[in-house]
Length: 486
Image 1: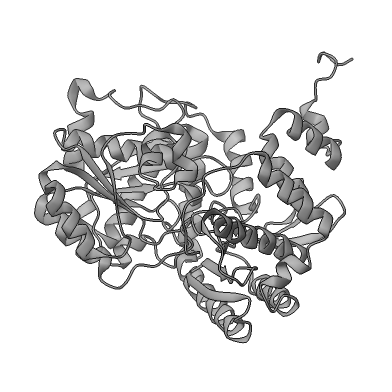
Image 2 (image 1 turned 30 degrees about the vertical axis):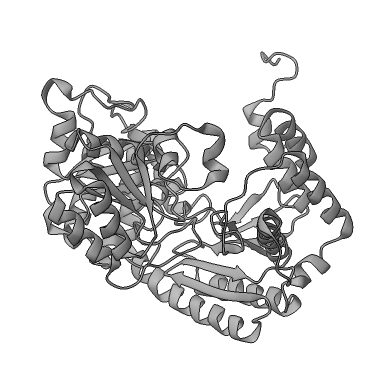
């Protein structure tokens, strides 16, 4: 006899897949982020989806698609056996304390040491750095901002870059210059300044204007992910580091999306000649199975905030939990065992070459393609080919990417939007995706391009009833849209 109250859903029912797709969507619409789920449902993207292999998912009809989505948080695909088998063994054998908040813990100790050793292979100056763990990328940025502020307590400005993305909690949101995300939450953290990405002269001029002693930190993504895979010009990161070092300004490298192999390097900042003072990591560190964030900090800066009796000045309930740390240790091992940064570099070069060929063949669809490793972007022509004013232009830009996402889905490819670059869709496949699956992924992108040779085809091939529902949905809750060229 069930001990659950009437209407409760048992864990066994979910595990045994007894909830139908329509029922899952009904419950999500009733009790979750209704607007998001409704929009996805209109597009036919709401799922639920189920794992077939680590690299392929199927919907309730049995239709299979290759998963190149996941926003770079799925380094080994969905429920990778190397991680899940280890987790099962951990749950059977581990005796270490689950949440060692006020004691040492072997799993936390191992992951701290391994991360520092890994970083020091590329940046010897970090050989004695220290690590603070949390549960997400935005928390890692929040911690980084606090470390920098403690180091320069009298400084009042934090500098980030246009089109950047650092998260949606209040501090990280303040450094994410996107009015769509920011406006309703103003006033934000004071002192957030924005400089053009890739423009070293503009950064130097900003430092002169506000006074370098008044700058707490400079926060930079080595490659902007949410911004549409923006790769800075050669020498930008190196010059940024040299400029900040002259003035004693800490540099925070946001490697949440680029770090640990995604771009073909362990640390993209180091590959581009930057030796940052603080590095933030998250997404791939959890192996796609747990939530892990990390802030790696030079020892003097770390001790300035968390020294002596102030060592509890910053804390995190679940950061450093044994299961998350164990998965982090195993994820780093798996990356090393299979040289997945090298594999990402090789597969990414193949993929970018094919995308560049498609851009050349279908310039009416693809305005530009960009990529570094397995972080790739397709930037589409606007699906309305005439100049449009202001917010209407932004709506068309955004709709272009949304319909491209839908049409890619129909071609058997699951991809990511890039809302800080509205006409851009990203591909972030697993770093260990087999060669034949990756080739099929690229084949399907090619079929998509062949059947949509011009951007207007994205609209023409969308059923009118879907277009009408999307227009109604967009009008339901108008938002301020960020001016964009893409």
